[in-house]
Amino acid sequence: MTDKKSNDLEDLGKLPGFKRGNPTYFENEVIDHLISITLELGAELWVVKDRLAHVEEILSEENEISLSSLRTGKPSDLLQEQLDKERKEIIKRIYGRLYSKYGGETVDEKSAI
Image (tube, rainbow, N blue to C red; front, side, top):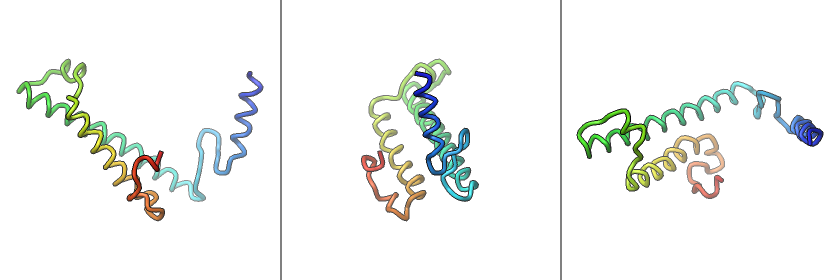
């Protein structure tokens, strides 16, 4: 088994743009870094938006909030449905720009998977 894994790793090294520990996909490495930064910032932004929506929902229902209710509670089904829709829209709007040359901002989520 160990031999198979090491062979698989050796095969990865033959892929264009692959660099062990720091893959590069574009000639200019800075572009890879900028894309990585964009992806990380988008993920962090979504976490904040999701959590804020949950806080707002708790406050509107209970008129108070505690860390335990925030940590253990979950958004209502209606809010979760709305958040899922907003997440898909923000992904299309922000990340679609990365491949807009190919119609990225106009595709549906099924074709991006």
